[in-house]
Structures are given as C-alpha cells and as structure tokens.
Length: 201
Image (cartoon, rainbow, N blue to C red; front, side, top):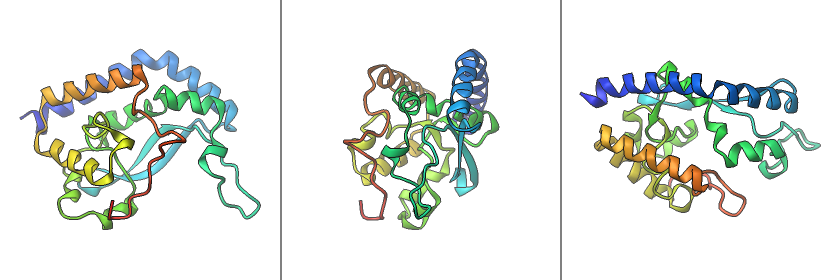
C-alpha cells in the first residue's frame, strides 16, 4: 500500500512544503546563478524515469558552457565556477529536483536517475531499478556513492526496489541529511570522480 499509494502522497506534500520553506534560499541562488550564467540558473537533461519513461531532470547550473577552439565543452573542472562549487558541496544543486518530485517524475527516495545511454548496458536484474520512480537520494547514495563500483550501486538499487517501505525511506533520508551535514560521499570530487558505466563495472 505504501509503495503504490502513500509514498506518492508523502512525496508531493514533502516536496511542496520543502519548496515553500526553502523559497528564500532558492530565490537568492537563482538570482546569483542567473547573473553568473547569463540568465540560465538551471541545468536540464533528459533522463529515464519509472518504466524508462523520459523526463527532464532539473538542477542548479554549476558549470559554464565554455568551449575550446573546436567547439567542444571544456572539462568539468575547468567549467565549474566558484559559486557552482559551493552549490555542489552543499548539495543545493539537487534542490530544484523537488519540482520533479512535485510533478511525479521523481520521488524523494529511489535509485538515482542516470543517462539513457546506459539502458542498453544493463542486464535484466539491473534494469529493475526502473520499476520505481528515481529519487533525489537513494540506498546506494547513503552506502558509498562514488566509492563503490557500478555493480554494487545497482545491487543496492535493486535491493531498494525489492524492499520499499516507509521505514527504509525514513532511514535513507536521515542518513542523507547526516552525510550532507558532514559533507561525506555527497558529491563528485576531483579525486574521486564518477566513472562512466560501460556495462562491465
């Protein structure tokens, strides 16, 4: 009952409440990022959601669109701005995803939405991560994130799919808050970047 009904209600109420309470902070960040990024405070990207249905994920734009002489985007570490670095380190870049939760594209808790190009690389078991809505945070995120292999991440994602419950969601949200406060395993870093998934890792 929780997985198919109450979870969505809790997501909607929590996302709406969060957006209202955080609106002063969000407005300030939007203004600062708009100034920094030529009126573009948000980053949009198409990701696969529940049942692989496409949706546009929303994040704060932490990098510029600077390109090299050939027209290719510069490496991430050369495009991220000082403000963007702060937004990432504090995990504020994820806050606009509350809009995705409000719309029903995402949940507060679930497997993180990755890239469409990975779909064809998943095995049958890994593909099960799309049986539920993707989340702002998830079981893999509080159990290592970038410090564990893709294989282990997907095992944790499938574990979540098999064990969705209110208590598990509360546990994940609490651990996420603690990690954000301690700034542990929250965002990618220069010394521990997230490597692309190639189907074998």
